[in-house]
Image 1 (cartoon, rainbow, N blue to C red):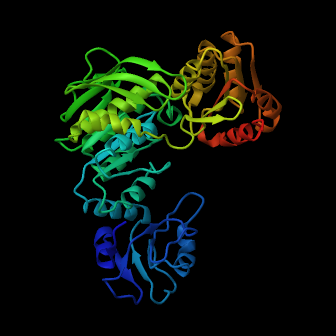
Image 2: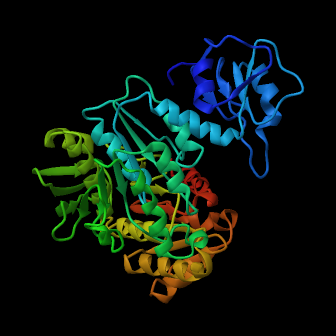
Image 3: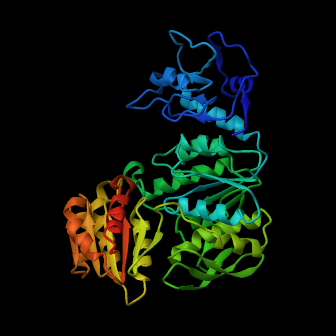
Length: 463
């Protein structure tokens, strides 16, 4: 973060200075919302949630070295040498501060949303654009109403492009984040069933994702998945320039002649309105064409040449636990896709496992998918069917809802499909699968913490 003076902070959040501190030229170069992680001289923003109130930690944050804080209410006392800015809402003030700070950077902003593949698309876009520009991108899961403002507040003068991931689980959230970011380019990956429990239907999910478009600049670019039946209906419907990507006919950006080495690379030929070129994507699964094509579209919009795009694609590295390929001694491969799961990403993961070399043993370790509402059992049974049809040799389901995955797999003809309620009960079955010539996929919703299963498998690798 570049330094902001107290004068700028007051202007940004429309705040009132409390206490005796009066040096308006005092500056901060860091923002923290966590009193346990205070950098000397930072601004502490206490947030309020259902189970906590950050105002309780203002004094400890200031004593730990914060230069000052925001507060939604006056204090009984004020520490000397510290500034206090009173605002109506600290969370809204965070948003206002991020909007003010973003305005100091006349660079392109790229927003990414969708049901599945946001993080992968963000990482691919950042890698491709990084072949020419200094790119700032969303880190980790900072894609919500707190994370997006904090992401913007980490911009520095050296950055030339900003890539922002936007998540949501309720209507209105993309509208809130879109108003903040006001992107030059918007990428929408697809419309799936993630968070359908909260939104009620896929149609409502579509409407919620479309909240980004009113905030896309009038001369901006919308990059949409042309193979998605809902997003494809937007052809000719948006006032901004719109391009469609995918494998179908008549799309602006398309991938063809796909081939995989079943080890870690997907090769394809990419066709754009300007050129054609061969690319090698350092990842598994045909679904990887979508983030790659979207990144290529954004790159061309920003003036990048084919050779730069190809170089950027080759530099792609997925975020931790996003289909990470872990090669272990003794010819054991673990596909760590434990970060999250929904029906669409499970289907893509089944295809990736199915593409593993024919002579390898293919094992799927799968867990619950959350927030799927009344149709949850049906979705889980369908996932079992996906893996059975993909040629999985063994399926181990762990979790309360995962039993329906195992049942769905057995119904689809996969005899070696077993259910265990917990990791502890699954340990023996898991350890027996850690052997030469096996590829083991691990995937579940974030709350299942399946990285513990990955750790368990790694600990059981022979030698």
